[in-house]
Length: 334
Length: 148
Image 1 (cartoon, rainbow over the protein chains, first blue to last red):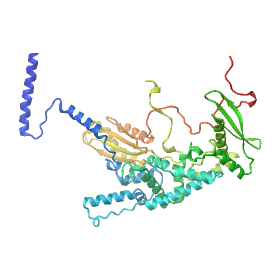
Image 2: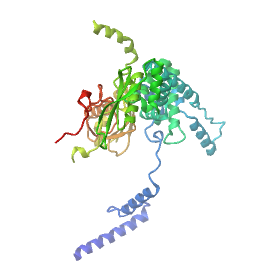
Image 3: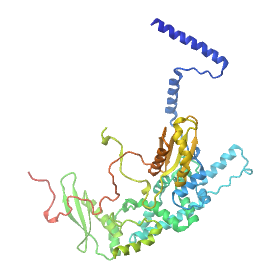
Image 4: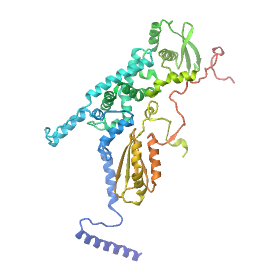
């Protein structure tokens, strides 16, 4: 025991002497052994993290391994589109970025005449893209659901061009990395206008038809699995049904309780059928009779507008195959 | 741990990929290696032989090759949905690395966790969901609890 202590103290002494000597000669003494400062340092860093919170997120363009030109080119080929790269790059530049960059340069004291910031922002492209998107989607919806009234069409188009769907699509297509914006994370409205500008750039570089297919593949595909009345808020479906039926000269609906179960329990169930001219239009379930009637009216409306869950899926085939399809059908029918 | 306790999801794709057109979900690959370490031998071979072919074959993926001194060799794959996967390739041969890169570029970038069912549909029933009243003539009367 005593010898062990002696050894320890001797070791400490010698190392101390060695350290002193090293300090005299070198600026950075390196002592091998247990790093006793490490624990305190780790604690300090953990405490700092707890007090200050995690550091603010950094845009991908400021992190290592980012070549803007290559990224933009890859973006274009990844989507199987022929963007003109100049237009595509212009589409990613937002007016807020240009403004902030200008301010930053003046703050740094850079002469604005010597190094002028020649950047064209995407305001025009965005406006053009948004217009084109709205027109195309309206046409597409009118062709796919011919019996849907204009309010319904407007709400579907509004849903597809709304910030929720557009930012979801833009984030999952990697637009956020390339967007030049003043703030990070990119705000939803900036991302939305950038995506519209990308569509505008596509329309300018390869024509309206290609841009239409782009919209069909990426925006319209978001309609899959979506219910009509999730997008279109109808407060009084029965009133709308009556209106639609009078327009088509069909006899007015007559609600009848057709089935019920467990009326005295906490989980009652009623089925209301809507009859028009003694024919069953639709039936719907509900916990109360009024709710069942409303549901039945919604089912009837879906059937009238051709937006049932079991409708024929929309055509998403690539552009070359669309013209060939009738021939294949005629072969199979023979 | 039982499989119920593990995280799980349903089978899905990013943005209904493949409904309209197929988009390769791998947007960026960074190959990080050391110039003289033994463990980076395979990846150095791969960089000499295969990386240019890979980049030519996948123009939608940006490939960054970065030598960093005394680094564990790894492949950092970034996907369109924002997920990042790091694969350590210490002591792997060139062929193994090429296989790994092909696998990474075929993946969707969604979390690799247990998938509850091998199939999924957005419209579960074509004919309509079954309920106790289906195919039951109204003349039978109400559905009520069984009498003892």
